[in-house]
Image: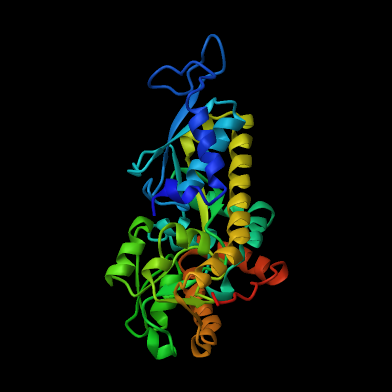
Length: 357
């Protein structure tokens, strides 16, 4: 679905309007080429950076999160800090807006900061609490240091994602050979259950599902799933799915850029990222029931509960997958110990997901 068409039915329309309005108003003279931190004789320097995103401008939902974050930072800084979205995802971009699952191949422990499968995962609210006050941010900073960036939570695709499938799930045997598009450690979970996990860019998920390149997709709550066209490409909507905690999105800032920012600008960007996380989560939760009712009334995919034979296997399988993840190295063990302590002592658990019926 085209992003601008989808925006008409979501709160992101206001953000897009703000972006358009803000782009026509100059608030400061640009910094000298080659040094975004060079001083200006008349006003504070304008800091202009690239914000790399892994999806295209036509992808509603994920792209809107990046648009709104850039708009928020620009507005809050009175136009002084400008993030220009770059859909080619250049490796040297100063800012990146993406799930940490994308870096799991570099180090599997990044998945702790995006979302773990089944009962092993902190829900979205508890993930934010662990990162902010439970030691998660320090551990995340340490893990990211070798890659030269500063990470922040800056968005969420929504809790309790549906598994959009073109094959019915009847029992555990139904998963055998099923090609499922999933991210991060959920790939290990589905592989252990007999399925074949595949990774596909968000912009290509609906087409892959419709064409039969994959049999099923788990990608965000219903708001984001509808934005990228998954319900229209599927025959079945299966819930609860494999990752009830959903997927968090991070803002990564190149470390050399972050350290050149003054403390006020660091605090401003951190606050905007935190607000973006909460707003995206609230929006997904608010829209969930309405969108599920809309799908039902319009004859959308047939609703299915996840078969009990599969659901009952998830806790043990996810525990084994996460144990393997935790054993990767010392950094993984430290992150896992902190994460699981928070999960046991503080986390509230996941609400029961209801099917689209």
